[in-house]
Image (cartoon, rainbow, N blue to C red; front, side, top):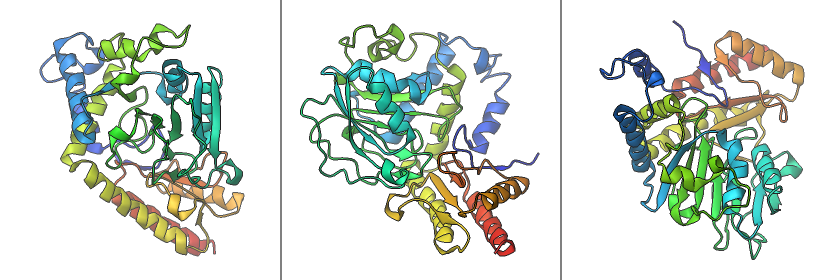
Length: 360
């Protein structure tokens, strides 16, 4: 069996030992005589799986007791509606638009109230993060919304915006668990797990308890109310049970690797290898302002669409897959999430050097 180096933006690479463990337990989970895939979510065995997963996530992120952890469905995109439905009490919210997903969230929120775009980097194809130190925060805004790491464009907030006391809501889908985070700075921190944590189908929402109320926008479906899921401890209906089980295994793996401080160091080392090469390459260049570069998603181009296509084709043949960039940026993108080994990035850079020599 030869595994490729998978640079996909999501669903993305998972730790090999987690996959191996899941394979070993596929037919019989810890003597239960069945797979987690076929197990009742109301069983004692499964209850232990989901509770352990939540506790491990709390440990990893130092989540305070006044925050609930919800394992939900519908991906990050469903949160674009769920957030305004639950939080827009004054029907006003401020959005900072730094990429396609923040833009979609802003457009969705506009259906439920006044969503103000208070800053944007769309003028330069989202290649930077705007200065957020003194924004025109609306007096009556219910919250300020950001997408913290932009998967498509490869930018990342290095400092959180000054929300002037308003609740901060952040989509962290593509930087989830890649570095330590101070949960208390957020009202809601959420993300789809299919980039850095587990298989597609689960979204994790970490939300401060005072934001969970019955006072939601009229017409909000039962399934889209945070209170319903919080009161039922994520078991209101059948959850994405197998996906949560894999997330739980990844949390254990992260603890074993030394937690989020260790992951940050590991991720910085990996990203440096790739960015250092891009900064001196004559053929390839990064597309992001250096100070706003993501550790997780690295877009780069040659400046020639045919050359880009040739590179992607040859890289794929050499076992470096899913390097084609998003259609809105073109070129290439290497997503180097937690589970991408350092050697994968080193080998990619070796391949890029060779390609550059051959195509100079």
